[in-house]
Image (cartoon, rainbow, N blue to C red):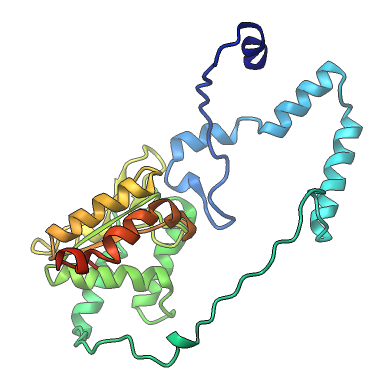
Length: 278
């Protein structure tokens, strides 16, 4: 319809398209854990291929047998590691010489000991949530595993280690501010600093429940506008040295959208203004 309009009237047309992601960012992600209401509806909705093939079948463009054959051929090509895009061409490989960065001590000595008894006390706190809260089954499993970690029954994984790094800082009065797309959950479904109730969608943050005199913990699921978010967080960090300010870039390469902030502020701010927020 848009093409016909443009062809007939020689005018531009804007399409306000509202869409959604059916699955998570990767195979380990489960969006139902953080958006139970929305994804309960999405799970019941036919996907794009089902809707499209249904229309083709109804219009006589494609039979059910042809549809199945096409899907099987495509799947077989993927399973066999074959190229499914005929126009694809291999790109030249680029390499960077990292030798100048090897065998150099970039670390500084810092007394980072933390009392074991206190550590176990707050570890127990960050693994607790109200019995009335219905967590997603996968999130519940993560927190059950974390309880076994502080009890010494399992080794700490990345998610628990990261949580305790924040918790020990908060316990000492240091503030922690974390932002990024789905920062509460974590890019790889590992963090779950916010537990979402599957009954009503409300959230619970264990890291805010350590004790009355703890540091402030904030976690913000930011918009997908990397430059704006990182610029704000950099400005926040320069004005609040008592807060550990963290921006999590989805899958790393999302930092490309914020590259100008990295180049012009983070990496050069100390030389420009004698003030470092890193």
